[in-house]
Length: 267
Image (cartoon, rainbow, N blue to C red):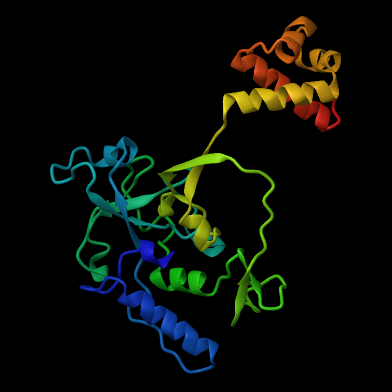
């Protein structure tokens, strides 16, 4: 998760992450630690201008081109910050600005909301999350895909030392694609690191397999029962089941909705 943020140290790439982990390990061993000088700066993630919605607020800037980078921040969602600064520009603000050279210069550029293009009001809107908050939230969290060495569920207090992979039971297999990358500035701050770095999964279904499963489900329930609950004629359903007819997509969706209704006991 930390790798998606710009280093708060000028000229550094990933050294700040190593330093953060070393400090966390020292703290876990009960050794004294000190705060970093960059912890109070807003955590900045580079965001590619790859879509029109992201580029639109900057279309009047001659220096900005498609596929350039912006600096994107995370608005604090703590209750105290929202209570002190309840006003925001839109339902889900996304603060961003042009890149700046050093973390100390973070307030110099013109920040605006990528959702609505409104200039960012630092006096009225909640503050940005800082590198210190991001580091603590990441390094002191636990991975849901891991268990403690004794096989028990991990918690923030017990997630220390050796862990083992969580057992996985495969219930089904399918074909998927992962084309859409999740923007880390456009996600809920309660998500885990692996969820933040995940992609939006698109599942591909073979139409023939879908129809075979549909026919089997209709046979198990009964043609007349499906007809009454779907609004599709028995003649049409018999043609799908017994004659191998290929129904329209809307017909399939109605039958599948009827099957879900029956399975839920609402038929």
